[in-house]
Image 1 (tube, one colour):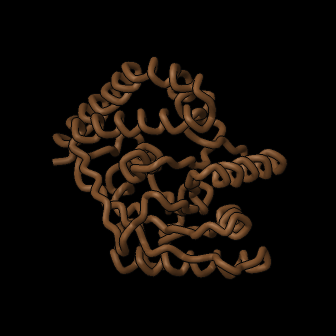
Image 2 (spheres, one colour; image 1 turned 135 degrees about the horizontal axis):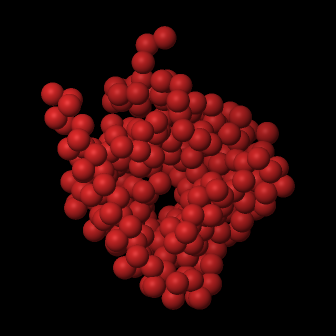
Length: 254
């Protein structure tokens, strides 16, 4: 059966890739124009263009993102969004998950890609995790963005979770930003991106559901920088427990 299905999956993946590139090239001139309007106004416009790209691409490849909110979500409010990182599809699904201006923190290496890299670096805050000074600069930029009324978004695991546990260890950055700016943390879970496209295999893409779960915000009012570890551990536990509750497919027994 796999001998029959695998070639069909390759064809599907090529079809999805060609659509990805084709839609991106059509929208690219609008990204270039938007980039002249500055980092805030232009960045917001570019993120809306990314929303349009996602609204076109996902239905055409038969992947159906669906958002679920455990508590009412206020799009006008600022958050430090934190998300689990488990799939090559995680970055692509962001414009479907977040229908409000946000600035993700993303790997600087991707910004070096032709065309897509230009869009990427205009829509996100790039970070080189191998450079301590660069990491500090990126966190300062994120804090300044919050000061301008825009939410920020981080993958606190830093890279793909390959542990077969719900989550891998969190970095401090997202939680320091939340405390220093007194902005609530909003955990978000990608429950199905691993099933749609695994980080190990670019040709594992397949159609189906893609649930996005917004959890209750975690307030930081009154917390100081010395509370960073406590906040990080609290958010980790909330996200881990919810992933276990939903029995996500990448969790394996020890």
